[in-house]
Image 1 (cartoon, rainbow, N blue to C red):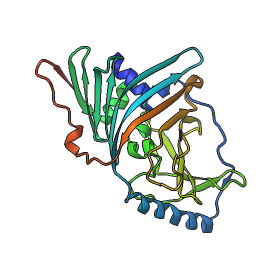
Image 2 (cartoon, rainbow, N blue to C red):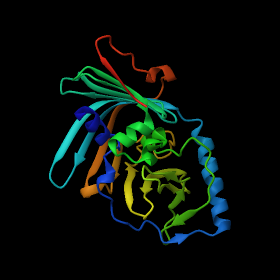
Image 3 (cartoon, helix red, strand yellow):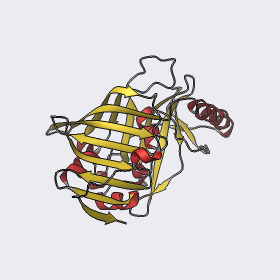
Length: 273
C-alpha cells in the first residue's frame, strides 16, 4: 500500500481523520440577504465565463510535503478533465512509472508497478479504506487544481466576509462524512476581479480539514490561466503540501477513455466495491 498512501499524500488526500485541525476564524460577518443576492449573481457570471476556458489539462508535477520533522518530495505526471476525471502517474527518479491512479469521480483504478497489481473500485470505498474525507473524495478536482468554481450550478445560500475585506467566502452544499456527520466546503472569491482565491474544508465542529490556496496569476487578466503553484495548509501536525506544475498544456482534448487504465496481462486484480 506504500505507493497508494504516498500518492494520496500529495493529491490532497492526507489521512486527515487521524487528527483534526484547530478552529481557525476565517470570517466574522454573514452577509444580509440583499447583498448575498447581488454576489450570487457574480458567482453565476463567473461560472458562465468559465465555460469558455479549457476543460482539461495535463502537466508535470512536483509535490512537496513539509512536517515539523521531515520534508519529502515526489514527482509525476497529472491529467485532469472537468469536473472530476483525474489521472496521476507517480514516477521514480529515473522517470519510470511506479504507480498510476485514475478516476472518473465515481470509480477508480490503480496500477502498482512495484507489486504488479491492479485495483478497481468505488471512490467511496477508496475513502473508507484510507480514512480520506468524502468531502474531498467527491470534490470538483478540476476546480481544486485550476482555481475555478465547481462546474455544477451553485445555489448560493450563505456568504461570509471578514471585516472590511472585499474577499468573500461562499458556502457550498454540505457533504456527509464517513462517520455520518456533515462536512462543509467554502470557496474564497474576489468578486471585483472575478477570481477564485482558495477552498476551505471544515468538519461539523468548525475545525479545519484542509485549506487550498494558489500562487498569483502571471497574466492577471487571463481568467483561464492555470496557476503554477498550489498550496494545501492547515493540515494535521502543522503539515503543508505544495504542488508545482510545469509544462502545462490545455490545447488538447482528453476523452473519458483517456482515464481508463488497460490492465497488463501479468497483473493480479482486486475489486474494492
